[in-house]
Image 1 (cartoon, one colour):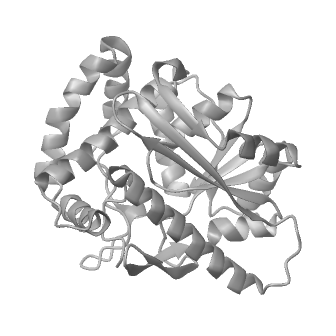
Image 2 (tube, helix red, strand yellow):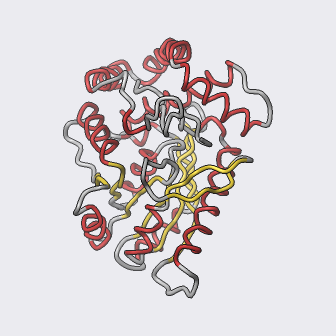
Length: 306
């Protein structure tokens, strides 16, 4: 199992999530994929318990961050059992990735809310932007979208893009999933081309990188930094934006939530920076809503508020 991402900038070491070493690697991902496909989901899920116990015991900083976040969202002091459930939810989503990336959506009971929103936005012009977070499963959304005839490309920071390609190759070498790396000279051109082809472009907006533009928003009782890049890209390309959340509900159940968020195809008299700041606060509020709705689904295992 890829370890919980100890992300963000560490105040003691100055490291950020893009520089964190991985305990897992392509071989480990390939092994998990083999276990999942060879032994079946029930047997593979049994392995999650010792794996989670291992990481709970030895990932000190991630465990501390898990308890910090859970205490905020649960409104009480989080215990070891809460952190174990947090880890197990993360591990379950990672395991299910193997099935979803091998086009086995039929294994899962998926409750979809707001499907018409994506269909409507996709039909309104050249593509739309889906704004998500490190919450639940993006793969369940991609798989459900594919079943509806939608092509979804994912935009992510370059190092994450590399790791995602390695994960995809390890799980399904024949899978061709659109991944656009940010930070390159032609990144925006590739996003624009994907939208022009009528694709849905997904971006996650709950992790910052050192030097990246960000605003501080109220989130779970304290201010935290949120990146403005995804919203700026949508504004620059004048595309509508929807929010997406693929929540894991236990067993084989997932719940997909899609909401309208912003429409940059229409001119706005509001100052661009002020508009983006207001939208990012709205994003933080919707993220908080879903964190409270499904608290063990948020997978940022670091001190998010620092």
